[in-house]
Amino acid sequence: MTQKHQENQEDEAEMRLAVLVTELADQANQGIEVSLEEACLQNPEFETDLRELWGTIIVTEAAAKEKSQFSSSSRELAIPQLELPCDFGNYRLEEEIGRGGMGIVYRASRISDGELVAIKMILKGDFASDSDRQRFEAEADAASRLNHPNIIPIYEIGEHQGRSFFCMKLITGQSLSERLSRGPLPPLRAAKIMNEISDAISFAHQNGILHRDLKPSNIMLDDDWTAYVADFGLAKEADGRTSLTRSGAILGTPSYMSPEQATGHRGEVGITSDVYSLGAVLYHLLTGHPPFMGATPVETVLMVLEQDPVAPRVLNRRVDRRLENIAMQCLQKPQDLRYSSASDLRNDIRAFLNNESVAASEGKFGQIIGNVFRETHHAVILENWGLIWIWHSMVLFVACMATYALQLYGVDSPWAYGGMWTFGLGAWAVVFWFVRRRMGPVTFVERQIAHVWAGAMCCVAFIFPLEVHFDLERLSMAPLLAVFAGMVFLIKAGILSGSFYIQAITLFMTAIIMAVFSSIAMPLFAFVSAGCFFFSGLKYYRRRKKQLDSRIS
Image (tube, rainbow, N blue to C red; front, top):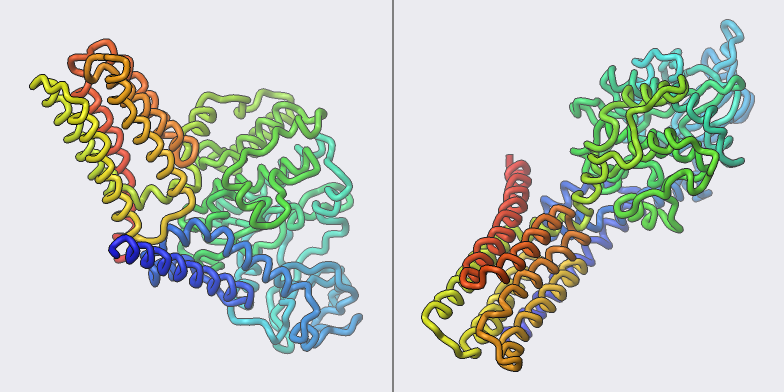
């Protein structure tokens, strides 16, 4: 009855999670603002699962927005459209030249002096929500504060007949995305464009503005190939004081957004996030393709989180190796391995243009080490295991020392050793798993790790019968304990965090020492194995506690 009751509880929890995720996705589809932090606060037992699934939810939200922007729904048709040409205050609107996620842009002439300009206004007009208006006004405010030759200047911000608008310089040319639809650019031309873009973004950062939505469609090229950065609709104060988008909302376009943006962890979004997007744009310039492009937005997000981009020279042999290194350094998943600023990226681009050596280098030792030891997006589940691993380290230490005591007292019965390591630790494994399930639904990745751990325990159970079968001295095969434990950590390193390679190597080396110094094999394994679990558990326990404390405060 107890086991059945436990299974029913787990099924009920998983059903509640499924309903919660469905509700959030439905809200996103309906255009309702969805907040990750609020969802976690209201459902703390599902926090880990929500953070893992948030990529799917935010992409659903993005898809819903895209659908709502370009569909001919009855509400869209109800929005009064301007009949062109027409007068609009001091401007005469001549033709529509573009529209984006929330705005529509017209080519216009200023009636007072006849100058050709571009007028941007909210796509939904009077039907725009307060958040749409706030974002539109914030875009205008952010761009108007940036006086740079490669940022489209804002001439006027105003409102006419209830329609918010701003007037900006008219760029006669095409967007970068339109040009890239015909294939990659020559490397030298790509470098010149990236020099201008990175200099503009560096200027924005110096003035406290993050762009957060850099992509080819937000970059204009005039007839002289001069590049201009546009659309600061997702801009944010660099110090984090003022955010122009809600918490947990999708920030950017999947193919060009950084991993920290793709997970909705806005607290981590900063200057290096824009650097990543600049690298994605450079990659597209060089290869004709974005670094990641899945069949669906969800697949693209997962690629951003889990995969490394194909080297540009594999796709285009004309790409200079130095430009390849620059792009790949921007696209590093650990933020500390990217350029620390857009100005550093710009300096490397200029070094390339001057035929000088660049700071980015292929296979830089720090990058290699950083990639090997970085956490995957699955590592968040370790926060559920922190305290349990601390307990596990103590149980493992006691089991090892008890085994050593049996050895010292000359106990030769394989049942004593086998019983302790098979039935004793097996009972603890049941408790371990029960405690974990009480904390909330178990994720698919956790089930995988549980199967690896169960496999290792089965291997341990065979040690003592094999010693009897081959007539070996008791505990002569004890070094295999460290081998099995090392293999478990090796698998965890590939799935969860590269830092576990350290534990794996340590345990493999411990196995060798145990074989050489068999008399102290068990105490040695006790300290090493317990330490591997204890310090890892402590790390993730503290991380979870810090997050909980920050929410409470």
